[in-house]
Image (cartoon, rainbow, N blue to C red; front, top):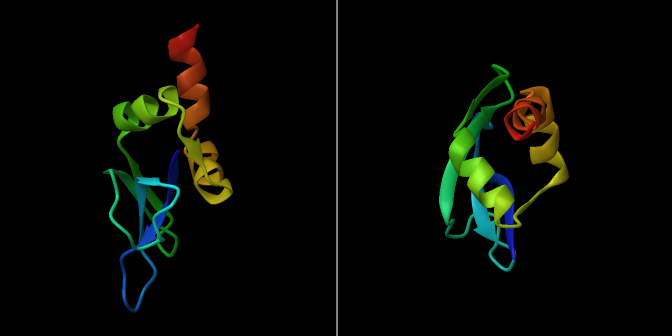
Length: 84
């Protein structure tokens, strides 16, 4: 099973990549694909929307934190518009 979750990148400041990763992998393990990044200090989000849609259609589950980030970025509103 694949999940969309955060992978920490920054050493001093916390910067996270949003990655599609196998459930059995650890947090810093090898990811399938990088689908975005999130900077909580500057409150910046960069998303690769086609890649996220691809993994969600294949059954990937976002973690609670990633789903909150996607909701703040109004990702699900855009998805509903494309489906209707």
